[in-house]
Length: 399
Image (cartoon, rainbow, N blue to C red; front, side, top):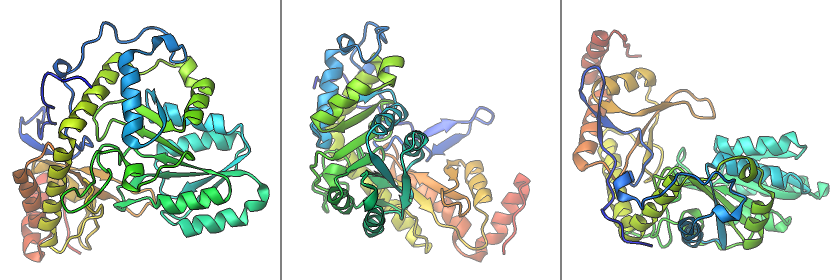
């Protein structure tokens, strides 16, 4: 990998609102390592695209070949191929595998983009069954009940779930898949760039940033990994990796590689830059990020709050009786703290997530924690908070 002209430019922690020009502390970005890839830091390109489809091998640059092989080596697979997005790759992958005699077993909390690929296979007649989240025993029972259909199982799951803060039990999934001659398909977008091999007290996320296979010490040709680089590595491009035979079949049978444009030279250059940063500074960035997350959780623990997410940089506040989540989100926003308001797939009401990145500083964590303390630290804050909401025209009541 080449020497780049500058160190990574970390994500800005603050933005300005168009109306008030007030400084906004941003906890909404999934650029976990804070990588931005300004054009001045990238290898230059003479044109964005060749005008050829990806299936025409002559259009693959040497830079893309280097990036692809480096990514395969990083995550622990024989070979890889790049795609514009995980949607392109899942669409092709499940379209291809639907031609085989297979059945799909879907982790109940799998991310929507993998689900959209599964839906394509289902539309072509592939049986789809769902099993309890992170429960290999439930998967094994389900496989046993359906063994008579003689379909090879495809186990589909996320490598890491930010919702519960847990890594998928890959060993259990693989054991169940092998027993029935199947494969494991992972969406590893959350883990790539964050988790790695040899986790320990000095490296809470592990080392290298290779993702779930490295974290779980898994080296198996029956695993297919699909991952975006847009989160941990900050490059809007995706990869599919696995055995040499599987990747070569994918390249031969892919439909979007015929009918859609390949990744542009710009995003390939950004991926190359990300790999260089990861090689030279990645473990330091991950160590710093883990300390920030630990400090945030420690500050909230004083309030009796325990966010979901473990030490992963996505910290989701659990509902507190007497507090309206949507109004708290608005209060944070009006106070200069941007967070993510969302609804979990299980539909249990709105949640607030705080996304911490290596672009934040300890005083950013302190500011967010202090504001949350003012909201949650006992009923003595209720009058002040209620007055704030009245001033905002939102209304607020303590149950």
